[in-house]
Image (cartoon, rainbow, N blue to C red; front, side, top):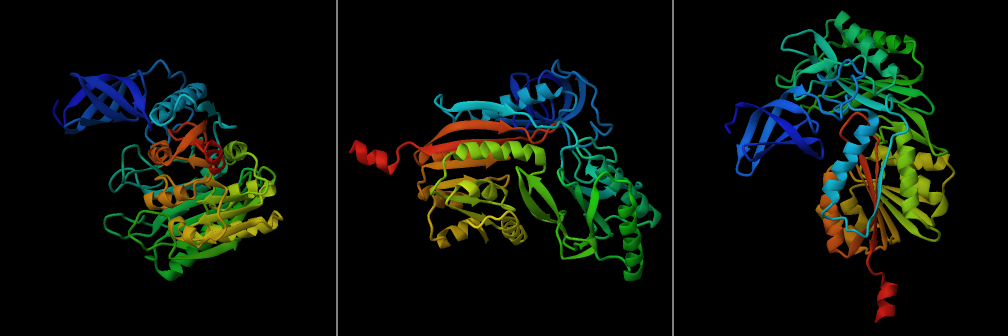
Length: 467
């Protein structure tokens, strides 16, 4: 097999996250984005000892597991969704297969495998979207939406996305039309010039409150910018949305990194926050606060977490990587004390306000890196809940967590590969995996949330009895 050549083959199976495996000439080639059973055409991109990767060019014959026309007109070109040609029941089966296979090496036969729980809704579930400005082809007309599949630069206008409420689509369409009217340029990633960067929209499912942010550089004459922003704010507020605009904001970001960040932020209208409700509690969410992107799915996830934590009376719970304190506050009513640790200070401030709004006095939220703050907390935990970012727990922080030797740990992961890696350290430290449950928070995509209950093989009390 030669690099750069095209090949055809049938996908035998997939590894998480949807890495199709094709066998040709007794060699296995990894092709991202392919489904099991598909006959595909691909180009070999990487070829080294023991590792070959191809780029999917075309699906020549669909899989037997594909049974529907994709509901979204952007499917295939947009890099956001992968599974829209599969009925939802098939998506669920495939996701469970991938995660179970991934965790097979660390989950023993004694573990209770609880399978996968579906999202309460299949479409229109996302409460947050970050759109990019750009063009679909070099020097083409301005676009606003998601990256094209497999492209770092090309942006596809996604004005009829099906995994968001239609309010998002109206805001995208209105913003793009106005930007074209003013003939504004997008921020070029290589030249580091241009004005328009991102559009960030957040919308609560329960309260239907909406926060809209336009992210730009500072590379526009001030008077022209003020005129444009004033018209943009009025346009957003005049759209016939089903939800209610809570705030319209302008964010200036002059960093070279292609991320939504703020050098400065101005509220053009309303507030810089909105409220969402989960399981009877109210949560204040601001621009950069972490909050699960599927609100209804989050209720399912957190109910499972609460079930795994179990009896908490007279116990101290650490909620590490606590975000806006959702898990901490759901556990607080039945715990002695809950201590949340989160590196994003804005999220910690919101968590403290949320606790006050919900009348919870036994929650404490600390701002800082988990690795550094654990040494400063005097009250030791009885139970630890982990909900780390995609890359999992930092090895040094994980070492400190394991040193507590608590009897119970509940680990929530949005990236099963990171979970599988971290579970090895728990097993080596004398823990066993009691239960595993997958919660599908991201229908149509390859991603899932996984919840694990870990317990010490022997508690100090049991060891004394045996001695």
